[in-house]
Length: 243
Image (tube, rainbow, N blue to C red; front, side, top):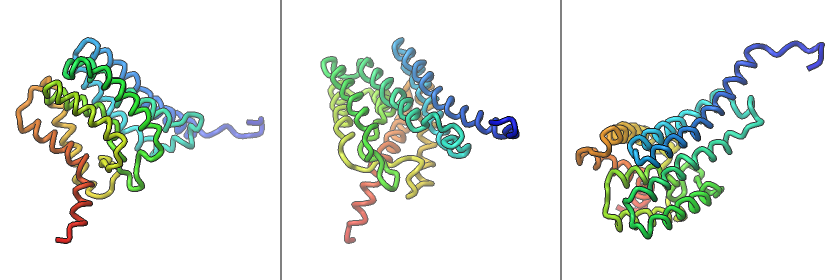
């Protein structure tokens, strides 16, 4: 700025500060992941999932805030996309992979192998430019290992069943089926958002109850997961049905 140039308006500084605040909010998700990991190391699993739930909330709100406050233009020196991917990897993948591996719910010989499979497959998925379809579905299992870990603790399946289930999800990371994005997919959005909100309430309740919940709660949580994973496939099959 030259001596003849007028100082930038105060509102400009405030907008840039607000935009920087959104980046800091996103980065705070990494700090929350560390707190979750510390609880996991202590085997305070419900507390760990509580922190991961907070990270999920941050991830849900920082994108809309960034678009509303025009963060990409006002703070271009930081890449919101890269920052989001870094934080998502630790909250959606790394901390849950630790929980899955250290939980004692898998076969002991398989647990470390599956943990390695989770982080490698997820790293490849995050780098895949085809991870989303044109209509905003995820392509393949979208590395939602926080959710996979949640259901492992909720259902407490036999170790061999849990191990096979985790192995299947690793494989499904690379299978090109379409998984519903709970916010960005336009088709059935109202239903999807309603079910996602219900899932959040029920999942929070399960965490507060240390996963000791009645069968209807467990059934509802499983049904919502099946909807997100299978709704698009079912609709496509129905459209091809000549009846």
